[in-house]
Image 1 (cartoon, rainbow, N blue to C red):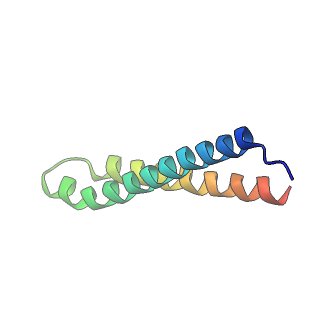
Image 2 (image 1 turned 90 degrees about the horizontal axis):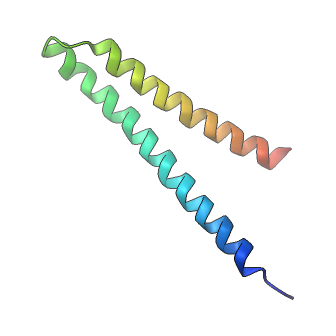
Length: 73
């Protein structure tokens, strides 16, 4: 049995980068939703932070759906 270490390392690297990016994007969405009340209280636009948070969550959902598509297809 021969292990292709280069391919294994490539899969590990891509998985690590995508995981960190997805967690970071989800964190930005949570921070955006938590800043909504602060922005409304300070007279800022709560709609901007809310829509930014929803965009982050939509991108997370799209990335997960694409991953499921890759697995199933």
